[in-house]
Image (cartoon, rainbow, N blue to C red; front, side, top):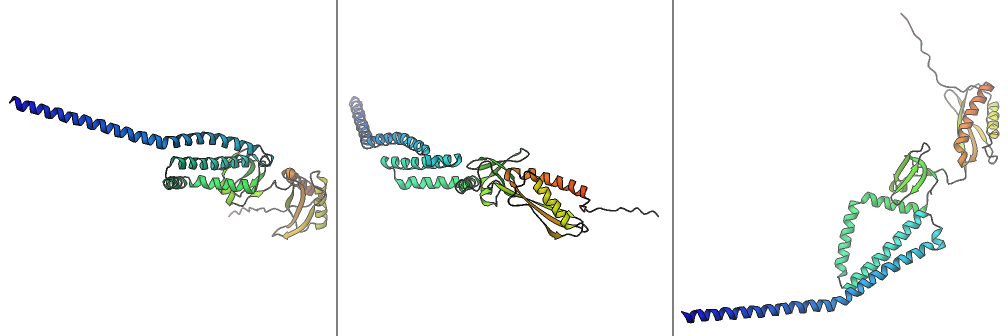
Length: 294
């Protein structure tokens, strides 16, 4: 019995010794593997970190110097900001890919991940990307600029801010309208401020028994008498159509763009007063109501 117990104890002791030896060998193997990775990738990691740090600093210095150049400053603020951002993002992307290549990460996997993420973001932000593309087109081709009065047949107002995604308009009654750039880039936009001068067009109705020559001379004299009317081109008045109940005289007078609405309002008021004084009738539709009693 004692011999059996002694043999069992020896077997257990041998098993424990073998297990301890195996554990020591396993630990040594793991440590050797870790040391191998450190030796192999440590230098790469160090180079990549230094390159990333120095590269970001150089990109910031480079973009600041580019923005400080005279040719770059000639662009408007929105274009300068947008192009500077594009340049910085492009350089940082190149730096990021270079760091990944140094670390030994397969570029195919990285490109696949970037493509998948870009597709997901693109699908989620279709409207925003369309506005971004529209803003880029507006900035590059400049159909209007800050301070211009524009009309896209839906909204009209003075351009007070041009962002990458939206353009802000302020209406004459001081309402603020935010218009997506995708709409402005795809719509027909009328820019009333691009030219220094504008023409005021008025259609004035007169009765058929009116002396046309007298009416025309009166209208021309009213245009010339207004100090806002330009002498060249001269004011123009002519019969443009025969209406159902009146002749239509078209009045055209040129003025500075900033004086357009002032001249238009003043001419309409002065024409009515002058026609009343001269006895010239401005026809209008009226309705006679006759009451019949049984």
